[in-house]
Image (cartoon, rainbow, N blue to C red):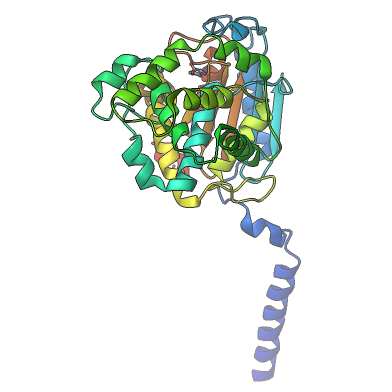
Length: 351
Ligand code: DON
């Protein structure tokens, strides 16, 4: 009797060990984010959104930068990159458009790499302005003058914090940092740069105002020129989604595995995106969508679902605040369908 019990016990343990060894979950899965989404689900929802909004002709290309007025306003691309580097794409995802204001997020990340979050907060701050992205009134009115790193004035101040022996050094450092976040080398779109450099009197005026208040930390016009170059970097929707996925993945690029941004800096970046990523449209965006995102007047928006991934949409026509109309619609739809709103307990699985 006792013998039979001992044998049964060993048979049970052996079966347990064998079934664990035979488990289909490979070891590599151990490092996979526990909240990375299922492929079929995301693919289906992104396709629904793409089909639903592709006919929307609302909005208008930015035209204060002459090059942008000429971009085909029918271009429309959607890319999702997850924290475990699954990639889904639809539409014009190979077209390289200018990153514009989305660059501000990554220069902020680089400034924090160099100076740490406390210094960046002291030098630039993180207060929503409630005004258009290029507002000189915000510089005059706000106690910090810089507002936050995602409006033009704060972004120019943030760019001025990047160290280097000369302007060329600083620019190369910024471009190479963006490339690490994208997982591949990125290039300047020279025509965009020339078009913006010839017309950016407003940004030069902002840099002079910042100088008046002692809130710019290098030569003002040199800083505006580097900032203009960073806005003219070309990205396609997949590269942009991967830059976003690097933020979603605690600063580790899901393609290269490189820790590009310090893990502890991510919450500062994402909270700033929530407050100011869509400028004076940020409050409405947080209310409806509840995801940190950043727009650019080139027509791109990237939104971050922390731990899960990022969605980038490119469609040039913009609303009055300077945010792509179709990009907002697609991201809003996908976020609702997948319960990604960060402020909803359902986003972490609570039924
Ligand atoms: O400085 C500017 O006005 C442009 N290079 C960037 C502005 C921008 O993208 C605002 N975005 N919605």
